[in-house]
Length: 141
Image (tube, rainbow, N blue to C red):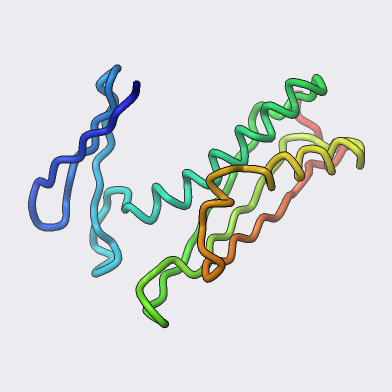
């Protein structure tokens, strides 16, 4: 079983360590001030959704023998206090490194939509995904 241990270092900073493997990430609280340079809990949550959606696409891509290596997802989110403090919007832009047939695009996007983490949010949080496909003429070797 994998576990994560978060240690509070003070002044809205912490260190999360994943075991086994001892992989770590520094965390800061940007909700109360943008001066924190570490990833925030919100950054990790929004990136977690992006990762889950991308990895769901990866399962579909492997099944259909599609290459999505090099896909980059731009992740943004906003917070609100109304009616209670929460993420109100997560915006994900999937920049695909190549073009795909319409039927393959549909399969990849449906796979992303089935991400179980995405389904875990309350209705108050809007998750928007946009997919940019590289032109066949501009494909990179």
